[in-house]
Image (cartoon, rainbow, N blue to C red; front, side):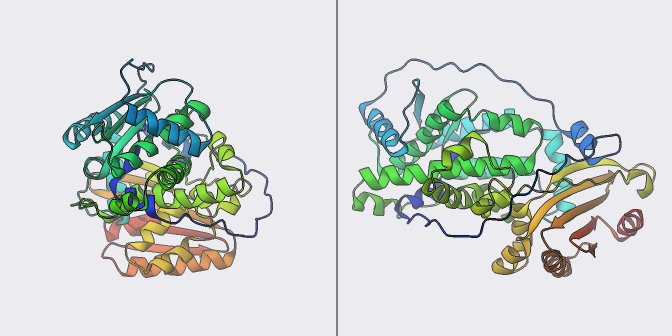
Length: 423
């Protein structure tokens, strides 16, 4: 799987927004890094290694020499000044139409989004009720990106593409500044490392890393705009039409937008304390560290395991999916049915999470294990996820034990009872 780093049209509006102020917050005590999860036969880690797609590889970076319009060279200088770093080598910049960008994005996603892997994950998420039944994660992500993305940068190739003309309007300026920040930081901090995390299917670490990268691009594109555009030009950005999300499920929409909002908050705090470059050199390992910047880098999550319950569920049940679930994922899930503040508070205090799913034809079972900082945090989450289950029409169960919460989901009542017995 390969990552493109994108500017989203809805967040071009942030060019006129106030940056989040750094907040004083208590720093959690340093905790030694937890031991890695078990990796022997039957463990969740072994199952993930089998299910995770093989690396796709990629062509070496080749920057095509071309004439760079003076307007783009000017934005390069603006971003270098705002970021305090310079491009180390030329960047190939393509200015394209929306139709051409959608075509390029579709091509990139076809190459980078593994079909079978995402089909299995789609079924697991539908069983949890994160998605409507029959939803394809791949198709939903493609619909989102092709409708919302207005520019992208691919670390693997060094390709930078954005919608506009050589005569830049304010929206094109902010978009280009966002992508140039990616290019500059890629050359200084090797953002191709995102692919290494992605190819190991380390979902929580990938989400955290992307939030740092997108948050930094948000921060410095805003600063470049504030320093170089007129107040009238910045205000004009607020008048652009934001495309509809169409039929993209809310869970996917929120997952896709989260790195830009939470990432900006993290980047603002880290920049104010002089630690943003450090976060790009050594990415945060959890979305908890993005949501609560004071917890980076000391508060590492606990490693969890879910043993293989397939044989106990019944003959024919095989591994379907394994995924780390972090504070971000749980907060967005809870927010589908609960009040946003209730979801935020219930997901806080997270200290580790993992689900494992099995299937036998249409029968699907998912067991999610979570651990929390304190028993009070676990109890709050258990109560919230019970309320969440009660608002839906799929079966489930919740078990609370000290600082751990186990949640079971299933496609039907009989499979849920088998899962409860096995767990």
